[in-house]
Image (cartoon, rainbow, N blue to C red; front, top):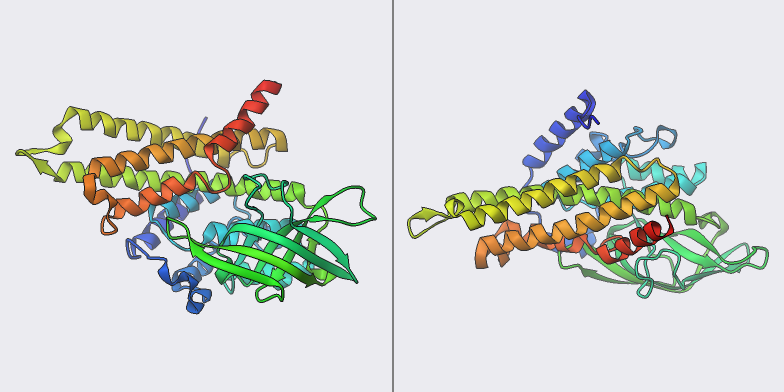
Length: 377
């Protein structure tokens, strides 16, 4: 099978490589929770001008109609450059769900400005006790006049502090519905009754825990009363994007580790001349190339029927999670003590790779899904 890029995809990869090479090698995230962090950065505006924000969305909603391979190219470049811009959390996940569920008025108000780089959004789907299951939630939406009232909490909402609005999933309680359904609601920033606790993950990503107490919404703020299938498709796309991002980070970790071994000398010889360290570098590259194959599998499976799509992407996410942790640990060990310092760039890649396994489901969660599918076959 031919996995070579088209001419347009090669141009996209080259453009991203040059753009990211012009940025500082390490962008700290400490100011993300400050009020100034709500303003779009110059790099984000450049993404918008180049059409990178439009790329992963269909032409029918104002995008450029990019496929899974285009998204893989973008995310791999962002992972390799350790770019801190919230392309996944602030654009892809909320934007994809919005594009699937919103009516024309909702898209005009929220999606169009998102693709133009005027604001960012966030997706709140996970809860403290849900263990990566988007349906195992207790946040509830009750009818309230012509609108809705939300009660509950959300955990690990990436980019909520800088979002103009947050898409929130809730279990709908309504007498006219035959059973509970998973609704999707859009909460503008500053909505009364919404409390946000901001923090950073260990890889310096801005996240928040949300508490909803008596949040009252208008009927137009409900994107869907039954959005479970759309949410599943959005999360699958996010997992495929994460796999590609992890591959980019693993590539750079391997390159930096190899460069360090070639430069570092002990007892008059280069570390790269030691056979045991050569074997460890080979193991790192084997995990990288196998993860690359799984990332390609995920990127090319997004348009398959739901059951087959979820099986393939779960397998890819599980393997990439294990490979990412292995590469991170080996990179740290081969750098020695300096690999743990903030001054050493590989330490930041390692933290990102370790946390990758926990975003959108860890390896154990996805291996369980794969095991159930194989048992049922």
